[in-house]
Structures are given as structure tokens and as C-alpha cells.
Length: 217
Ligand SMILES: C[S@@+](CC[C@H](N)C(=O)[O-])C[C@H]1O[C@@H](n2cnc3c(N)ncnc32)[C@H](O)[C@@H]1O
Image 1 (spheres, protein in one colour):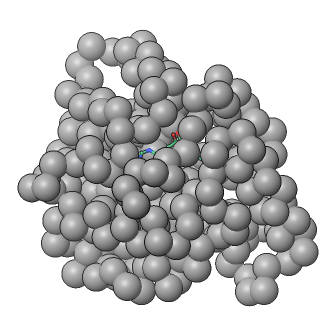
Image 2: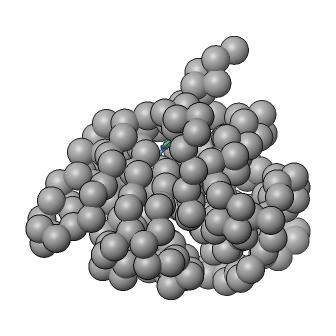
């Protein structure tokens, strides 16, 4: 099996994705994505993977204009939207390396001070997620930061409304975006496998959404 065989396809939904997510979640997903941006050092080398249409990239550059960013996105349409979005910003932008592809587009020796995974990790079944997280953790420098934001019920078992919402979301994105997962991964288990220490966390949207900052040890 190739590791990219199960890539998603967000091209079809790219033009409406942001509007749709705000319709369902209001500002919660945006607040989760920016919750820990203040922890990013001034001149950090940042990997933003699965950033979609570039809203988080824009926020990152506003807060830390000196960072160097590798923007890795597997959907050509999403990547194009992100490029257009920041092209409208001022000319003293730092260099941004826009890269079309998935985690296999990282060079074996590339290392980052910070990795951002905004609403990316919930897309994958366990085996692919293991591979992706191993690959990302290897690309993170010792003491580097991993800023995670995703659907991760803070309450176990999750309340019925959260389970229903998750079920309908997986059904929808399975059809529209070829998302192969049909349920949330066990993030506690996946993060426990990695040499990462939890630094900070916050919950949003009645505890369905979490932002977590991990440091590599
Ligand atoms: C659920 S969307 C979230 C988009 C954005 N982070 C947000 O919250 O608005 C997931 C994004 O990750 C991208 N993606 C999925 N798998 C990827 C991979 N392996 N490498 C890079 N990007 C990926 C998709 O194309 C899509 O744009």
C-alpha cells in the first residue's frame, strides 16, 4: 500500500469550506486555531500542514511577521486560495514556501521549530494517522512545538449531540472529500506514542473542539 493512497480531496468543497465551517461552528474553530499562536518564537521555522484556504496562515503572519513558513497542502484549490489570500497582504511578507502535497513532500532532513496541524488529524484512519504523526514528529526539532487543533471531545463518553454531529460530519466529508476515517481517532493514544509533553490546552464549542500545545522532549 502506498502511504498516499488514502489522500483526501478537498478541491470540490474548497470555495465553500470556510463558510460552511463557520455556519456550523461559528468562531470556535478559528479560536481554537489561534489559541496558542502566541507561543511561537519570533523567527521560528514553521510547518503549517493542511491549512486549507489560508486563514490561519494570514493570522500567523499578522502576529509573527518574521517567521518562515512551509505551507504544505494536498488540495491544489486550497493551496491556490491560500496563495491568493496572502498575496493581498503587504510586501514585507516573510518567505513562504507553498508546497503542493502531503507529508511525503517533506525532505528527510528538514526540521521545524513549530508544526501546526489545524483540523487535519481527524481525517485519517489509525494506520495512516500513525504514519503521518511519526513523520511530523521526526520533522520537529527537540524542544519544538506542535500546535494541534481538532475535534476531540473533552468529555468521555461524548454527549449525544456531539456524537450525532460527528457522525453526520464523517458521512458528509466521506462523500464529498473522500475522507476515509469514519470516526475520530483516539488522540490520547496517538499523542502518548510520541515524545511530546503537553504544555497547554483549551476547549471550545461545548468541549467538542480542543487546542493543545505539545513540546517535543
Ligand atoms: C478539514 S480541512 C481543514 C482546513 C483548515 N485547516 C481549516 O481548519 O479551515 C483539512 C485540510 O487538510 C488538507 N489535507 C488533507 N490531508 C493532507 C495531507 N496529508 N497533507 C497536507 N494537507 C492535507 C486538505 O486538503 C484540507 O485543505
